[in-house]
Length: 273
Ligand SMILES: [Cu+2]
Image (cartoon, helix red, strand yellow):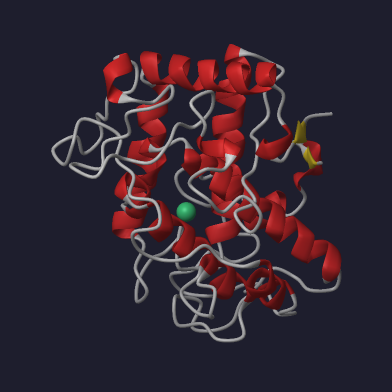
C-alpha cells in the first residue's frame, strides 16, 4: 500500500528518487501541464459564479484528485514514489531540512528572488519556468517576507470545526471547516498563508511551478483526512441542487468523471504515515 510520509522522515534515497522524478516530468513537459491546469482554475474560479478548484466546497476533493493524478505521473517514472507532505507547523524555518540543497533548495536571493541552491536552481538548466515565464524564467521565493506560517494551535482550531462547508459556499463562508482550512477566514488563514509565506511563484496562480506546492497540498489533504477521522458523522456539503457549486455527486472539471463522493476516501490510493 502506498504511504505518504512526512517529508522530514524521508531517507536520502527517497529524497533523491522524488527529486529525480520531478526533474523527469519537467523535462518531458508533463509537469508544466499541471501548472497550466492549476492556473486556469485559479483564473476562472469565482465567488459569484462557477467555482471548482478554489474558494468552494470542492477545493479539497479537487486538489485530492489533482495530487493523485500528479502522483501517478511520478509513479510512472518510479513506482516506489508517493507524495511527501510538509507539516509547516513543525518545519517552519528557512533552515529546515526541506529547504536543503538535497531536496527543495533554499530561499531566493534578495536581488531578484531567484532560487540559486538545490535541484531547482535556474543554473542547473533543468528547471526553467515556462508557464508565465514573462515574470521570470527562474524559480522565485521570498520566504517569510510576507504572511506567517500557521501554528499548530491555529490548525487545531480549524480541525475542531464540525461543519464541512456553509452557504454561500465561497470565500465568505463562516463556520466552514473548508473555508477556514483554505484560509479565506480565520486567524491562521491556513492554506493561503503558506502560499503567501513562501512568496515568489508559490504566491501566484502558477504556484505549482514550485515543487513545494505538492508537499504543501499533501499536508492540506492530510488535514482533511484527520478532520474526517475526528468528525465521522460530518458529511461533505452541499448535498445537491446548488448553483455554480460542485455538489456531492456532481462531476468535477477538468476530469468530468469524478465526484466529491468518490474522493472522500483516499485509502484506495494511499494512506498517511
Ligand atoms: Cu494551494
